[in-house]
Length: 113
Length: 117
Image 1 (cartoon, rainbow over the protein chains, first blue to last red):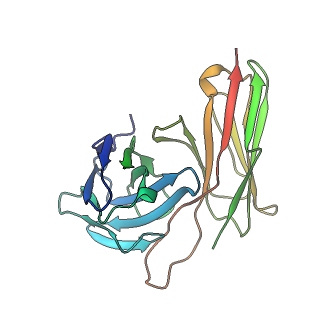
Image 2 (tube, rainbow over the protein chains, first blue to last red; image 1 turned 180 degrees about the vertical axis):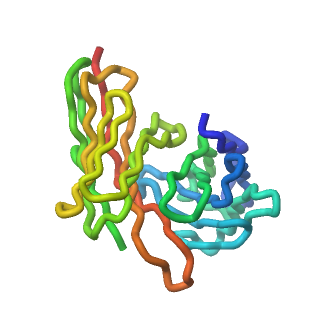
């Protein structure tokens, strides 16, 4: 158990809908990262937050947004969902924002039908 | 952007055999991370290598970082079925983005390891 908690574990929704994925980082970790893993794209970095502020942006679509709350949990919002958004979404956390290992949650499997 | 190439893409070995997985970067490696993933599950952190020539071991898994070759290798000794999974290397591109924010990990496409009993 990495200490990073993601909910829900599975999500099935229809195209055009909006969903929210939640991540609770390890106790004491200030940095949260979101990744998307799909069969054709592999593991792709989406966005990083550190202590409530956005620190880095990767291949995140405009239809996606995220935030980190004062209690350090983070949410990833996916809207206007398309079939191609079906993937495993991982959250990871680390103590600092560089040069430290990141610990991953179990992921949320999103299926868009 | 930094690209990581892993080889082989998949590997099937008999239990008890040794094996090596390689991760080669298109750019200078400043930090290299190895993770293991069971299909459809989360990533388990294995090791982080930060300096050239650094070598770390955990149980039967050893990882090395060769800065000059921009490469890292993961070696498993006397493999067991519990070693089966997808091994991913991730790199830490040094420096900051245009927005001044910090690092983001870039991952290789993974090596699927199957260990036959």
